[in-house]
Length: 217
Image 1: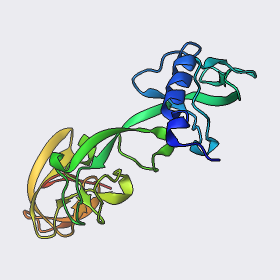
Image 2: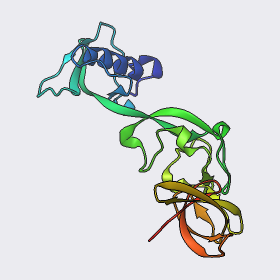
Image 3: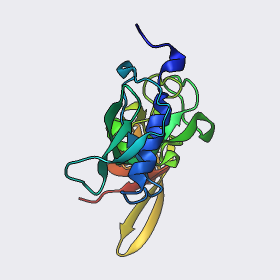
């Protein structure tokens, strides 16, 4: 006959006991780590232990970042189980505070910071939210989604037809000239520009908004 909920051992209590036992054996996690316990499967249907649960480090080789904790109930009928506990790395990540449509330029209000297990983070995740501010969303992002490089593109530094300042190093001196962008360009991307003084079209690198560094071959 299946046990009622009141007759079952609370899994969260077992996890807490396993963690506190492991903490006596392992080094304390730093601010970028945490304990990962179990999991203890609910389908085990362990009867509630009426006596203090005996706990200790289980057999086997012990590693600096993980142990096997043994929990034993001396009731009749008795039960016991082994619970793995390990220390895992975590990282702050930028997460969408709400749904964001494609083409939006991110601001600080669009993002929140959460801490996640590094082993579960997608490639290209952003651990510094400030880097994402000012970037453009390339496709819709759902609320709570982790931001990655693949979801964002840099905003345009210059746009075709825009007036720009051309900067060139000549003889150890920095020379500035008026110019016009002949193509769109992201930050640090090559763009074609026209020198308005000479009319010559040259290639440069968009260094920031409206500033293009001329490249001499």
